[in-house]
Length: 82
Image (cartoon, rainbow, N blue to C red; front, top):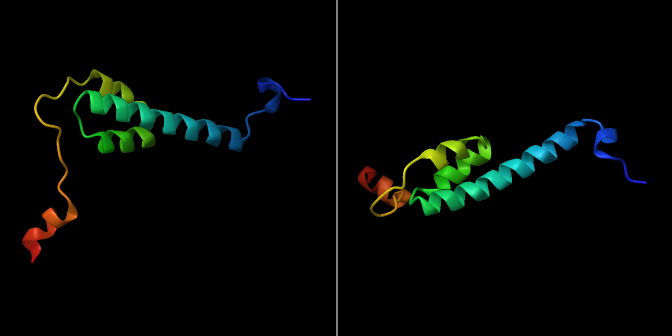
């Protein structure tokens, strides 16, 4: 017989699974919102995965006009070192 949610208790594994699912969902939603608002989606997906409430900050930011910000590749950053 299956246990009800209240009968399961608050084991550490349950909270880790809930946090992992929340963080993954927050990162996916942040990627969609950042793409819509013309922002760097990898930056926002990463930070919203670590701290999911940052989705609120992203949702309140205005739409970025112009081209989407492009991160320089490692080759572009290291070009001046050689």
